[in-house]
Length: 560
Image 1 (cartoon, one colour):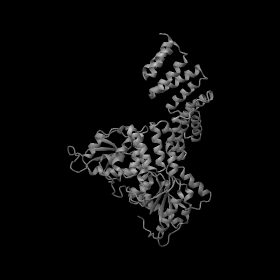
Image 2 (cartoon, one colour):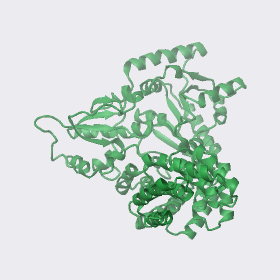
Image 3 (cartoon, helix red, strand yellow):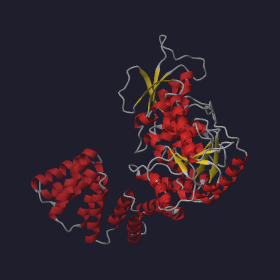
C-alpha cells in the first residue's frame, strides 16, 4: 500500500475513534517512512487520547521526533506540551507551550493550555494573562473562560470568577465542569441555594458526575439534611484524587452493618464477635470528629480494627470499642469481616436523621501525661508570676492551621481560615494566662518574628516542644480552661475532650459548622464565631474580646 494511502487510513481510524488501530497504522507508516512528520505528530495525539499512563512516554517521544523533523512547527511543540501536562510535568509543559506561542503567537489553544498549566503551578497572575489572551484570540473559547474562572476563584476574586463561569455556560450549556465550578464559587460566597441548583442541574443530566454530587453533599450536610447528605457524600470515593477509591461500591457493607442497628440481630458468629476494619480518612480533624462512631459499632457487637496515622494512636486508644489500632499501610487481617471508611459510618450504620453520638468526652487524655503537664504548667506559672488568691484563667490559642506543602490545592482555603497573629495583640490587655498550642510552620516563625519586633500581645507560655502527638496536646488541654482556635484539628480535639472551645470561622465556613448557628450539634462545648463578610476577622475578634472580658469577670479559677 502506498504510504499516503496508509497514512489516510490511519487518519480515518483516528477520526472514527478506533485509537488502537490508528496507533498501529501510524507505526506502520513510520516503519516505511521514519521521517514522516504527520505520522509522528498525529500518532502522539492518538497516544494522548488513549490516555493510559503507560503509553504517555510514547506520546512524549513521538512529539519530540516530530519536533526534530520540523523544529519550527508550533503544533508539534503544542502536542509535546499536552503530553507533558498529561504526565503531570507542568514545568516542561509550560516550556513547550511557550515555544509553540513563540512560533505562532495567535495559537489560542496553546495560550489556553499554558494558562491551565500555570493554574496547576499556582502561578495565577501568569495564568490570568495567558487565559485572557486566549479569550481575546477566540471569544467563544469556553474552556479558557472556565479556567480563567478557576484562576479568579483561586485569587479570591469570586464575582469575576462567577462571571467567567456564566459566560462559559452560555457558550456551552452542557459544560458540566463549568457549572460545578460556578456552584463551588457560589458556595464560597455563601449563595447556598443557587450553588445547589447548579449541582442539581448537572446531576439531572449526568447522575454519575462525582464532583457535582460530592459538592452537593457538603451543602446538604451544612443545611442539616443528613439523610440525603450522607448518601451524596459517598461520591468522594469516585473523585479523581480520592484516597478511598477502593470503596466505590458500598452497597453490601451498607446492608451488612444496618441489619444490626435496630438491636434485633446480633453479629456474633460461632460465639465470636466479627471484626470490622475502620479506615481513618482525610485530615486529623475529620478523624477526631468521626471516630465517635466507633463505639456505636462496638455497642452493636462488632470488634473494631482501626487504621490511623501514628500521631493519633495513643489518643485513639482511649476510644471505647477499639480492639486494635494499626498504621494505614498495615497488612490486612484475615479475620476482618469488612473494611469501611470512617466518614461513611453515619450512613452505613443507618443513623437516624440528625442523630449524632454525643457521649462526651469520647476521647480522654492519658493520666500520666496529664500529671506531667500539670507539673510543667505549674512550674511555668510559678516562674513567671506567682499567683496570689484566685487563679487566672488559662487559655490555649491556635491561630493557624498547618500548611500542607504537598497539597497546594488547600493553600487558598488555608489562607482564608487562618488568622494573622498580630490581630490577637489586644489579648495582651486581658488578665489571663495564654498558652500557644500552635505547632509547625509558618505559625511558629510568625510568633518569633513578632516577639523580636516588640510584640505587645500576650506573653504566650510555650510547651509545644513537648507535644509529640495528639495525646500530648490533649493532656496539655486538660490544664486549660478555654481553647481559642481557628478551624483546625485542635478545635476538634478540644470538642472531643469536652473542653470549652471557641472556634473562629471564616465566612465560607466548613459544612460541619452548619449555617446560622453559634453552637454545634457535633460539640456541645463549642461556641462558634463567624465572619459576617469575607476576610472580616475584625468583627469576629471584637465579639470574642467582648465575650472573653465578660467570662474573665466571672471566672472562678478551677481547671475543667
